[in-house]
Image 1: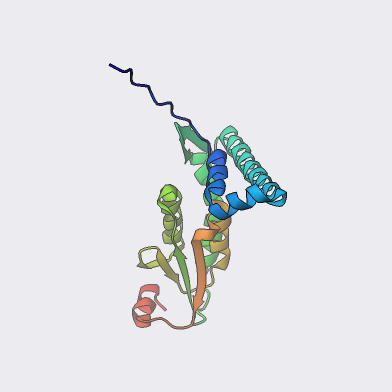
Image 2: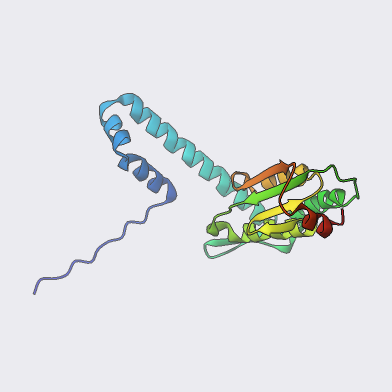
Length: 185
């Protein structure tokens, strides 16, 4: 009976996967084989990816050292100290929102589509919006009657999710009367 050979799994890091994904694209592979310029471009992109990952790794190490986050296996989570550090600035901005300014007739809308792998941050963003006084129109769509651009920018900046969060100003919206009652306008 022939012996079965055990398959060795090759563990690839994110950088290696990025390089392989780049190489698997037919036009890039073809260009790589034909042109030195393309190979320089590929190495430049690989170096940029590596530098970006290194900076993130160092930032995570600093956050762990300051006890803002803790590591559970391969997962990271905020500590109370981290929540306080993030929430302090958000509470300050939220207090500014509740100052009773007169309504200017415009609605502020926040829409976010945060991927499942960031679900803890998505939940945190949702809680911040609730605490600030936003009302949920639909899943991941929130509305507020007063200017709150600073809060949204703060959330985007502090959570590093700016590409998943949109902010807009509406002149009119359906069911405006219902919203006016909700916000006591």
